[in-house]
Length: 272
Image (cartoon, rainbow, N blue to C red; front, side):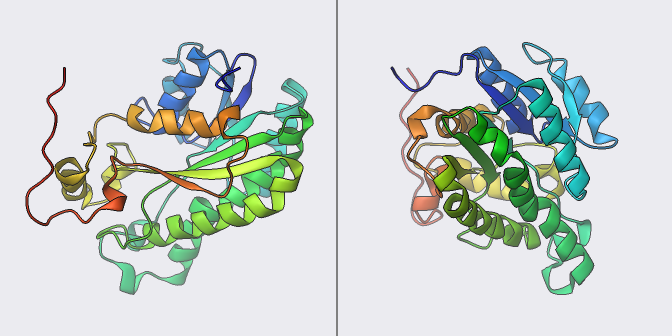
């Protein structure tokens, strides 16, 4: 028994926008491992999500989930209860910052914009986990909530309030781990290195940050490969992580552990 067995497991994956999305690659990997998957999206973005869903190994349904509407959480939970009766895990890959909350606007961001971004990017994890907790415990073996974040231990130029939201997301995850752990639900985050996605293009400093990772990450980094993050997500969704909760696991080539930019970049082994 390896614990890495997804046959017959059921997962909700949020945040799929297109084939570049980390969430899309997670959904594809789950299906390839034998799991059933349902996606969620909202409004006009749902059309894009459905096109991306059609490119998965087994095109899944896309449920409507507006994370600013409590009724939507209840609706998704009821649909999943009707469809499956229980849920093994959920990927939270939802984040949004108004234009006046990123790109150097930190000191001038109005409260309405800052709070809106917090609701979508951090508070939504609490609502998602709380609304799905009964389903995550219904199968009798506990469940896993995994969220996508960045290295929020440092201030990242250009990320501004998005960096604040990600730091808040980490705190929300720890409190969820404490409150949901006794029911067998574990909550963890994956801090991904900079990856070329639709949302990343909204950060004006993204290319410079990705250059830094690709130059200095001890294990190397490739901004064009979302698959670098998928294995860590699958580990946390699997039974191999059944005693792991409240953690932020870095999938960033190791850059969070070192100070890059001093001396010469690490020597890379040539691929075999």
